[in-house]
Image (tube, rainbow, N blue to C red; front, side):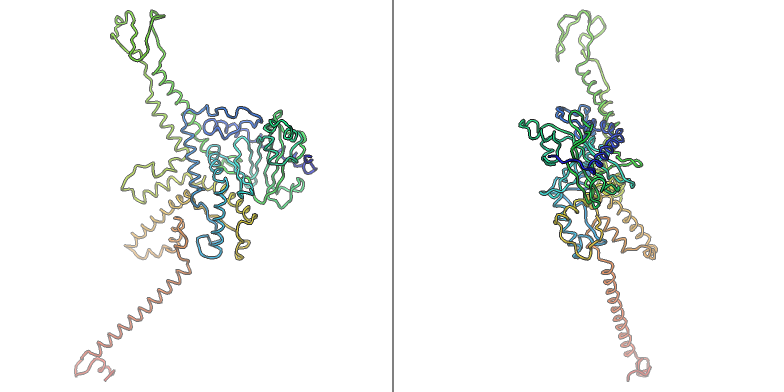
Length: 576
């Protein structure tokens, strides 16, 4: 028998149903905007209406796209984020406790290094990197993207990418995206396989157990909710208060009433609690307290539309030049005429009109070159809108042998500053919660080694060492180089200026910005010990040198004749 709703279940159902409908109302303007973005940039990642048993899903969906430049530019930016922020082939984060990280040799460092190795293994052996690539593509086009991370027995984690049009998001009082609702379709067979036959409705169970196997392929709409469990309703909704987030699935509607909900569902398909947020919600850019983000795709939509219109007009112009509409003398009606290459049509009285004996049938000229030039300008704007020039700093400039390091640093810093805010938001809203979630899952599964006693209860910090992060930091290091260069020039005139620079901190900061191994730089204590030893050695050397100078002076005095057959020492009453 399917589970029946208890009092807490009815309370929860009324709540989630009402909130889903409210979120749908608030999302309407974004929903319609996303449709235009999907039409011109990413039609395969959008649902206009979540409809079950839809037979036209395999139909062409990119009828608005004649020139794919915008699609390629968006794909380039998404690919740049994958390789630059969370590359599957190189490290992109490092764990740290205080000032101790995984590159040092202490027991804590060894533990951090082992945790990093296991986390990278989990990411690579699961479907995380495939899903994060889809996540970035959604992000740069729609401005909002969602990644669901669940525990998995085989691969530790399993990730999902809800597409735009399926989900709704909302923020908390600190403007953080933490509320996630969605509607999506599942076949009867998939629903029973995912939630169990005892948890589905009686109608779904009948379709599943019916002898006609075709019924298992029928679809129903499933609703899904994830939100914080700290609103004081945990016990009212049947959740333990220890969970930080709560989640529930329920049958929302069928083919007869899509997106309409049910009057009294027999029970929830699933209810669970989580210690950390399973729905990773990222936004590209924000306006005030909007729940949804803005994107480069929204900025480039006018250019993408113009590109499609002008591409159509250019094709029409070329078509009219190659196969133009014709005007003929009425005498030629029903007379043989040839429009083949090299063919001749004879017209009576043609030469009397003042035209040459032979002439071309086609005399139409269209400004195809001008249209092509304008199309290239639009394509260049799209590339800049999607930061393709930023990601290809090296290739966009003319190669010269006399490019100085300072000029290169200025170019790189000028380009990377444009991506700075978006990259920092990705760190805060996406990568940080992702690592926290996976770390917690691996820890509960007993995969991570026990932490050393000295860091029990301490905060573990995340340092991002991705390529884009390094590029931003390397650009910042150019300022230190220029400062030291200017200081060196002034020191040639006034050496006292060197006292103004804290060289120890400068070198530490410079090495950190270049993402060098911290072991390249000695600790302050080790450096002070070496300096103390060098100072003692220098003092001993000076004492030895002074003793030697005194000895030489004494020997000189003992051998100097000052008259009367006495040396200088004998004259002073020293020696015989």
